[in-house]
Image (tube, rainbow, N blue to C red):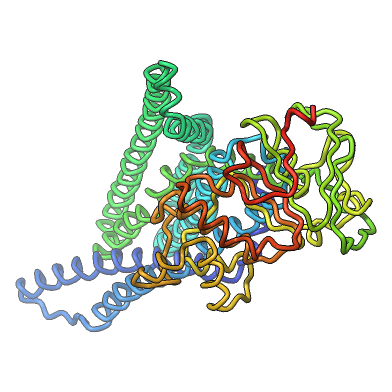
Length: 550
């Protein structure tokens, strides 16, 4: 249960809204109890009055007060149900947004080595599925059992007004049932539901791996085996889901049977007292139907607590993520970033990339093209310069000052970095560009689009700069998305520019136009270019092949 403590503290930040939601849930259940119980009393009393009239007896019966009460409970139940859904779902969505923002901010602050401990799909699964699982903490695991307990106590008090021994017996039976539906159900299904969290993570990871590596798997002749393992994992997860649902269905059926048994027992005993003149017939029916109305609060509990193990597992994984810290330590007394950006990779070693004792210099205001095959370590060298990771040995220095002596934020403000992966948001062209420079004018946006040969394309779009690029830029071709990302980097106007294969996905004619267009943006800046061939990179004053550095 300790796994839930951080999340309970987060819920406490919204305690006012959560308390309001719980009160609305309670009022909804009590309105249902009042509606069904009073309706039963009214119908029975009306029937008995009619029989007495038919027998020739004169009986006074007020239909207005109970009729008004029935209308009140019907209306209050509808309104409170609607208000509860609006308040609770709005509150939970706020909490989920806060959770995602905080966890994404934590991930954004991690270094590349720490992020590399898990695949991108696994980090995404934590930001989506795991956090979504926690929305059940309030809506299903905290508020409903408390509301059900209040409902049980209120109904038992109502019964106790007319017969105390019956109320005590019902209270004992219903409290045992409530404990079974919560604690018992959680324990019974904990292993199964907790396993679902890990299985979903693994299944998503394997699915993404198959989609991304489809060509490689086909070429290696292992696609069929990978598909079979994927199907086997999927079938196992579905089988366990089916087992879980069977347990939920069994618990719900038993809940209904036990509740109906309590209703019948209460009705039978109430009728006995009615025959003895201790209780009226309408009151006996009212008490039985009030008990029956508790089904609204009790039958939702088995499905909720069947997922208790999943909630614990998701909370445990997210707690582990929160404890992760970046290996990129901030200096206690950061130094100012030097004005002149003379870069020196001084005897740098990175074990996981196979880099040992590398020594390389990039003078301020010059361009260096680093050429090498894929996987040789070029991108690692760029990541060191961008301080996304620190070397295992040696240092990266700027004007003689080690990057570890500079504040990360100050250094990142001086860098514009185009990575191998084209990262675009599901937003407009303008919004994606403004990530490079938030206060850029439309004129500046058009200028940089012209430089990367995208201005004509954007101008032809119906919404122009407001055209949405789609998720991961899927509304654009690969080359268009790459040029948009390049435009964003150039727009930042940073004194140090890192371009990792900036022209990938471009044909020769487009490449030449972009090469000429971006020259004014690269002038007088310190530029590191990475690629396989200097012919497909912007002009560089110095070209170094990776083999020369070994």
